[in-house]
Image (cartoon, rainbow, N blue to C red; front, top):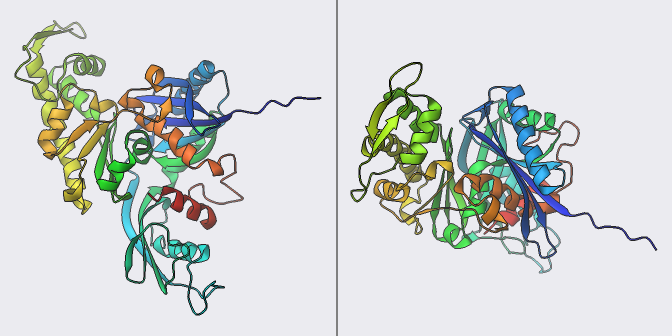
Length: 423
């Protein structure tokens, strides 16, 4: 009698950022839980603000990160969920309305809403005029309305004549997405799906209760700061601020006349987002460069460089929250994540800017994170695993049948995704 080994269910994620590429591999157990098997990191030099600026360097960075994750996990990565961010992202809220079709209802003289109706209303909701170079990346749910009844999460089986879907649409410049896909494929991987970075991060650090009662997630990366606003379980607003932690490091390097690397070390080792009165103001020696003499500053002086730039970044985020039209309803305030949140006293600084409840978001919901990827800087790549688990009924199914755009899925699949994302 021949025994066949069951192939492990694997999900992989890839976050190609401005300063680092992170690759992760996880296994799904029989209870549907994720266990992290391997994490790989490599320096990134081919990406700027979420966009590929050097294909060769980006491919090399991806290969290095993937090799490290594969070695640690002792399995090969094949299909990956890939995070996307950058100035090429745009978003908006939209609605679609249809008249419910007269199908074969179980109740005479009624109009029962079917999957076909939902498909049609979603087509209407995403029927917007886009520039030729842009495509839809995500159709994210907010709510349905049947006749005069609002706030419906799943309209299937409801009786009504008029069906409305309210959605949040995320669009991207097609060439930016294609460049990322080509780099990943050149590294020997297949792109399962492109995922908006803050959407992935939200899967890793937010709880359902926070999404229901209102919260903004702010992911401060090196090159960009990404935002996503949730209320009543749905995505109400997304935005990308075109700079992040590197802007702070650049300020330090320019003002203190040192290298970017030295400035980054100063920021990490001695920097405060808001210098506390209880901390002793210690002197810091800065190595001279190119034959120059060493110089000195203080922790308070360093913070005086850092704080104004953080004020600017967080104030821009505050302005975006106001655009969401639910800014005064965010019960759980702001959750900050990403590598840029690791500065000391970051919660205090953000609380001062937002005048709201603040917490730092750490990745959750994946076994093995404590040892390998528990830092906020791994929120996006860990979230990709959870996003993949949530969408795993598509896993392993080709997404690009002859000539179809990578970003435009079949409507049947979109409807399934829509209901899966609903609350």
